[in-house]
Amino acid sequence: MTKHRIYSVSVASVYPHYVAKAEKKGRTKAEVDEIICWLTGYSRETLDDQLVGNANFEDFFAQAPEMNPSRSQITGVICGVRVEEIRETTMREIRHLDKLIDELAKGRAMEKILRK
Image (cartoon, rainbow, N blue to C red; front, side, top):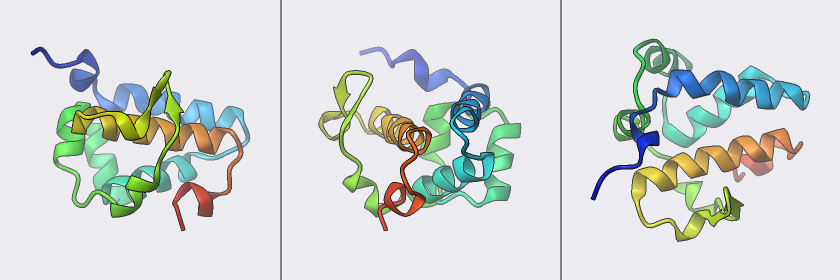
């Protein structure tokens, strides 16, 4: 079975779209970074290294220091698919990130986004 093409897309090429989506709704780049770091365990510095190194989504999630165990609480629909029903691990992690960025853009409080 062939991998979805999003796996080979660099995170750095999508990252500006995450930031733009957030900023368009009055949120900040720092909040986007906080979400990504919370989800993956990257520090701000190692996140920057991944972006500069043009890591693709598959490698980005495979090399993540520690995926947050609370990510299992991320539920709902993204791109017409229920996040919790996605079987393929990497695709589920990508959709978790998409869902968190959507919640940020919709004005949800950071405490709720980060499942505190």
